[in-house]
Length: 88
Image (tube, rainbow, N blue to C red; front, side):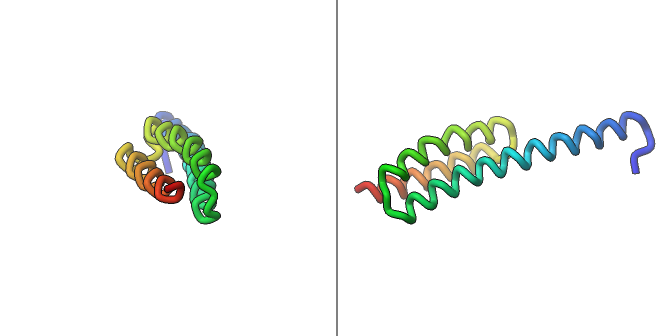
């Protein structure tokens, strides 16, 4: 348990930040799930729209440090190639 005032404040800040990051990560996963479902359904137009919505959300999460920038780029790249293959 924290003893000093600064350590207590730090634990409060960490708890708040953890909640925010959990919400952001959950939001990103929701967007990714929508893309996955659209790809699974075989609807190229829906998949394209879902990817267009998911990409900025992933990059925003990377910018905020919720996910690593390379991870976000890799996910976008792989989803984009799958959507492209679907529409071709």
